[in-house]
Image 1 (cartoon, rainbow, N blue to C red):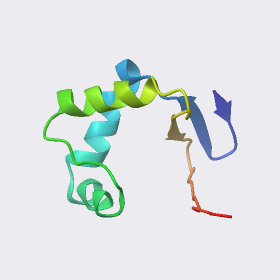
Image 2 (cartoon, rainbow, N blue to C red):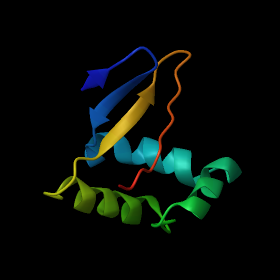
Image 3 (tube, helix red, strand yellow):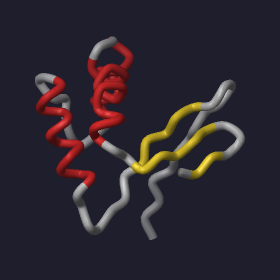
Image 4 (cartoon, helix red, strand yellow):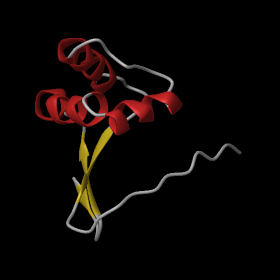
Length: 82
């Protein structure tokens, strides 16, 4: 786990994070709208989403993290290709 001033990064653990991530990304209009820009999903139900997370968590070429905002926290990312 890495914790900064605004967010905490936790290695993704599907058993711990799947329900919260599904709730945030599938149950509101704003959550579903983010899928417009992502290459995967949406998933039809929590079980399908949890299965997808388990597959990702087992990847040997990437480490997946969950960002937990701290009070007043935020995050921003850039996709940079050399």
